[in-house]
Image (cartoon, rainbow, N blue to C red; front, side):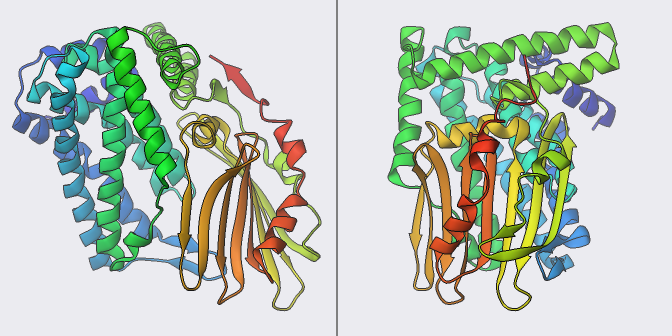
Amino acid sequence: MDTTKLIARAKAILLTPKTEWPVIAAEPATVGSIYTDYAVIMAAIPAVVHFLGSTLIGVSVPFLGTFRVGFGAGAATAILSYVLALISVFVVALVVDVLAPSFSAQKSQVQAVKTVAYAYTAGWVASIIGVIPGLGIISALVGLGYGIYLINAGLPFTMKCPPEKSVGYTVVTIIVAIVASFIVNWIIGMAAFGGLGAMGPRFSHSHDEAAAEVAAAAAAGAAAGGFAKGSNGEALQNWANNMEKASKQVESAQKSGDASAQANAVGQMLGAALGSGGKVESLAPDRIKSFVPESLGGLKRTEVSAERNAAMGVQISKAAATYSDGADHRLNLEISDTGSLKGLVGFATGWAGVEQDKETDSGYEKTYKSNGQLIHEKWDKQSNSGEYSVVVGERFTIQVSGNASSIDDLKRAAASVDANGLAALKGEGIRPN
């Protein structure tokens, strides 16, 4: 195995995919060689990162400190996630191959494995930043957004798909990949927590309908050569066009040799991949901190902090505060600016139809839309505690958690935050592509 060649391939597929995909499509390979020369090494990255993060660094638990998973359990979970990652590449590749005729593409198992394995590079590499506490969500969403772009850019070369049908082909492939990822994470959760993984998020029938609608629109659009105006398919096509423009900017920056221009171009591309409309600078710590009130739910503020984290050109900001009466009553407030991830937040609050509704003997948890806002509620009636969060302006989140007499107390506390003021800043810091 030539590690120098492997690193060069990973760098090329991420920075200059338009010129690298034709090379990948033309080179001789077998399913086995793609795995041994590339996938078995690259797929190990997130497994190692997870092991380091959970076993050596640990997870910060509010008020309790840092929790570290035992070495044996951490290693077992990492190995399981690694094996399942390799399996998921093959499963998704099988679907890519089977779908080929539906999008006027050429069936080829080897080319399908190439498509998936090299497109997964984005997620595998992005997972590296997940070892830093608080940046896991950035790494996951950056990997997803850029991985979608890589598949869309690669299908015309590897599977000989007509360019005008690649968006539809990509959408159906991504739906399958997300389902596969969900199953993999569920299995890992079951193994790591002895069945607690089964308690993970469940989506309502409306989410299934949304996915089916996207797949149907994609297939119909592919057959007709274009998507209907105002449809989800048209939105995806516009996204692909923005990615095409951003990709050309990256290629141009690479040729110029200007490091600053290259970094800016990559940031612009990530903004396009995440659907944010461009590179977004999240609110400065002191700015987002100004939205934290002195009192909340009749309790006095005892602690407050604010921070801004950045990685791979993506920024998120967060302000956090604790409110207490000095006795048993305590509330926690978090206000977050999702920055460049706002495009994915908009996706969730828009046509993705994300919903959840689960009831147990001890309480309930649900996610729903109200007046155009995405809301999440969780309540435990045994401990009289819970959390309430709302998405504002498809960019900011307000979350209140803690002990209360009912969930209504948490709702009123969240309502005391200046949501209108946050919503007015939803376009701030955006640098269009």
